[in-house]
Length: 533
Image 1 (cartoon, rainbow, N blue to C red):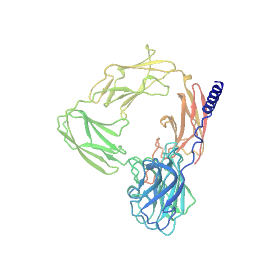
Image 2 (image 1 turned 180 degrees about the vertical axis):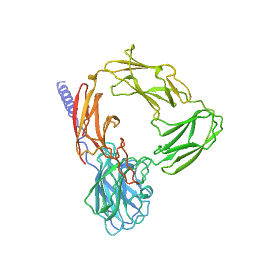
Image 3 (image 1 turned 90 degrees about the horizontal axis):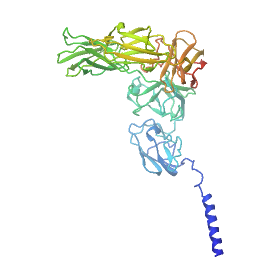
Image 4 (image 1 turned 135 degrees about the vertical axis):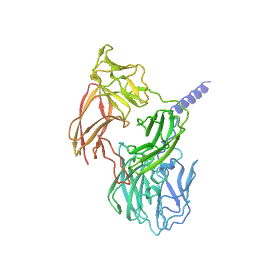
C-alpha cells in the first residue's frame, strides 16, 4: 500500500511539473519565404517563354495582389497568376501578351507573397527578364507628396512615358506608360529600375480603376514639367492633386412644380441658362446656385406649358447645349428656414438664417434679438443672395443667453411665401472656456498667404488671409488639437487653387507646421512657423 501511494504521489508531482512547464510551441516564425528556383532563371536574356514559375522553400500564399503586383512595362492583357487560393510552394505567371522586342521587363510582387502560417512577406520580390541580348540597368528615384493633405495616398503609380514621335500631352489619357512602379502602403518613395537611356515624361497617379491611364474625374495626378533624361542622379518629387473637372453640363431635371435643376461639372461661373420657349408674361424666373452642390436651380412661377426648351452655354469654353424639360404634376417646393448655429454659440461664429427657396426680402421690423429673454439688443444683417442666406451680426458677451424671434412676414421668398413665427435660442460660454493662439511666420514667406487651422481630419476651422506680414491671431478656439498650414496664394484670390496638367500649372504650395498644436481652455499660446522653399 505504501508503495502504491509513493508511485501515485510521484506521478502526480511529475504531472504538475509537466503542466507548469508545458512547451509553448517554440519561437514564432518570422522568416519570410525564400525563392529557391525560377523557371526560366531570374535575369534571363533573349526571353521567349510564355510562363514563369517561382519556387519557394515553404508553403506560400498571395495577398493583395491587385495593389502589390506591378509589371513594367505593363502588359496590355493582365497575366494569369496561380494559385490565387490555397497554399502552394510555387507561383506560376502565364503571359497573355506578345512581348516587345529588345525590352527589359520587371515583375515586382511587392509584399504579396507571404508564408502560409505567419503571413511573413517576401518584401518586393522582383523577377527581371529581357527579350533582347542584355538587361537595361538604369534607375530613377524619387518621392510623392499630396498637394493639400499632410500624408500622401498609398499605392501611387509612378509612370515614365518615352518622349518619341508618337508622344503628345494626350498620351497619358489614352496609353499606358513604358515603365511603371508604385509606392507602398507606408513610405512615399519610389524606384524605377531596369530602364534604358532616353528622354521621358514622369507622372504620378492615384490610379483608381488601375488601367494605367489618367482619368480626370477619378484620379489624382502629379507631373514633372521638365523632360527627364536618363541616366540621371537627380531625385524627383511628384506633387499629386485632383484637377478641377472640365466644364460639362448635365441633363436638367424637373424636381418640383417650381424648380428645375441644372447639374454641371467644372466651373459654373460662365454658365448661362436661357429659354428658347416663348414664356408667358406671368412666368417669372430666377437662377440660384445650390449650396455645397454642383447644381444651378432654375426657379420659376408655375406654368401650364407642356415643356420648356433651354439653351445652356459657356462662352469661356465655347460650349452650347440644348435641352427639353417636360412638365409633370409635382408639388411645389415651399419656404423652409434653417440656421447655421443652434444652442451653443462660439464667439467667432456667425448666426445665419438659410432658406431652401430664393430669399427676396427681410423685414427687420419683424425680427428682434433679446438678451436674457427681456433685454433688447442691436444687430446688423447682410442678405447674401449668392448663398441664399441672411447673416446677422451682434455683440456676443460671455455667459449670456440670446433669442432671435422672427414674426410672420420677416422673410419673404421669390414666390411671395412668408415665414411663420420662429424662435432661435443661443447661449455663450465664458472666455476662459477657450484658448488663444498667435502664429508668427518666419523664413522665406512670399505674400499673399492664407494661414489656416484645420482639425485632425483636414477640415478648415479658421483661416486668416494676409497680403503683407502680420501676426496671425486665432482667438476663442475650442480646446483640442489643431493642424496649422500656410497656403502660398500666388494669384491672390483668397483661396487654394489646384493644378492642371494640360495647362502645365502646378497647384499652389501648402506648407504644414510640424506636428499638431494643442489648445486648452484658458491658454494663451504663441508658435513660430518657419517656412522654407
